[in-house]
Length: 315
Image (cartoon, rainbow, N blue to C red; front, side, top):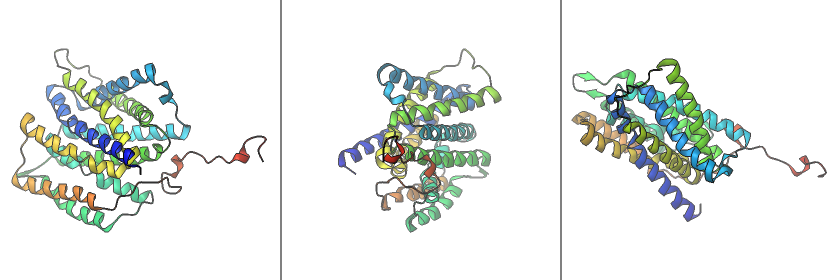
């Protein structure tokens, strides 16, 4: 991998992590102000799509081109991530932002799991990290005399699983397709999914006296972070980008501590330490730039191979 592309990918992945670390704090703030979880997801995603679509229409219409199978892959990834976002913000209404984000930060290990199913081998260190993370999650869910809402915790882990799956689907597509194109079509499918859920299950118009600034901030964060995220995946691969994405955990915990007043007990900090150690140990795995594979569960996302003899007049 050329150094310039690696540096570009690193900057993009770190920028995405910093931006995504702000999202759960603003999301929790919006819920506390009176927005339903479905409303938060629908309005912030639709706003992000509009922020991305307008400059593409005005200045870069070439980014709307995508090959058919790639478009289908973006739609599948968007629907999966849309469902994951619904789970995420519904879980956030049950959990403190810091605890929710700590559980969600389990997604790099799920990325490794999906890559294994896509014919990428797992190292012994990855298995060891799983052994560290499981007791870490258990301790993190302890709150003295009572447990954290289990339903919320399960939904947050479900969101992490789906987010990881959408990452490796987009990784396949990004071999041929520019990051802005993947971001636009994935976000569009995600917006349709979450808006449909909002209209079907909770079609309530927010009160006119509710302040909208957290939603507007989330739309801007989603727009910028997705562009950076897919730029990182394109140049580094899904797993390496997920590793760097752990930086969002630090941002969320610090902001939740000072802004929302969230607190963790000593036992929870021990659990958070085990989970963080498990995640950060990924950096000691041998990570090489991914190359396109012709096998695996996502091989159907590869563009078709065209033989010169397939053209009329060619022998």
